[in-house]
Length: 314
Image 1 (tube, rainbow, N blue to C red):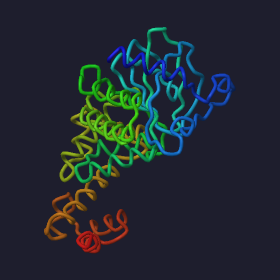
Image 2 (image 1 turned 180 degrees about the vertical axis):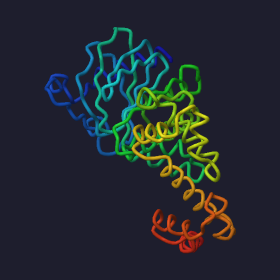
Image 3 (image 1 turned 45 degrees about the horizontal axis):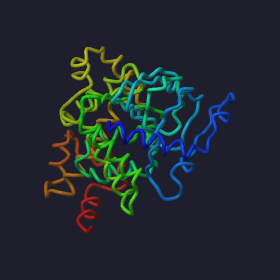
Image 4 (image 1 turned 30 degrees about the horizontal axis):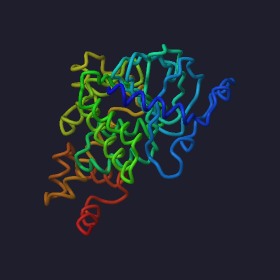
């Protein structure tokens, strides 16, 4: 991280303090920090330096917060779990995650990206049909669509590309032009896509998290012929214990994830090929065409044929 650029961000943040005082957050209830205090009515992303050594009491956000550890280290308690951020790490906090910032040293400097939830939905639109289950799951975690308050911990200290993208966003924040907001949105999109393609460096809600991404990766590559039994062998879990763990960590079961992937793939084939509907059903893993029709209609609100006809007209 460019030290001069970082110091300039620190000075800028000090000159424009948060509208939320720490004294307001000292009650028993977690304070809700509102994004409008930072984003105003137009921005989707803004940047602030966090150099406080006092810590911050329990609070929640109505936006997505991304903490990037530029220098030193910090400790946070998120949803009751302790998270240690080392230099180069990211902490992504979904809406309504409960966070406590523990006291830190004077040389520990983090950058906070405040992101409007609507921005992340644009990422999936940008990815389009190339999105994977992992991409979708990460976005759903951060926007709160999983129904759980979640956090993701990325270890990205060995990625110069990530540091470069962070520096670009800080630079654009400090030296604003008429295009700065759009540049930061595009840069944040690149950053997220880069991180999502390196899931081996992600922790999800603390302990037990690698299992979620292993399961998603397995379904992504074996949606037509995979099984929970085979996944249990690959992960060295008892099949019943694996099923319960997936449900506990994500709020959904293996079959729900599998069906979502199969229907998503079927939609892509209906839209982009001339394959027959029976052939598509078999290719995504359904030999029973009537069962496929029922699942598809329930998920998409229309039959496969009507879906294809609609997409061809667009």
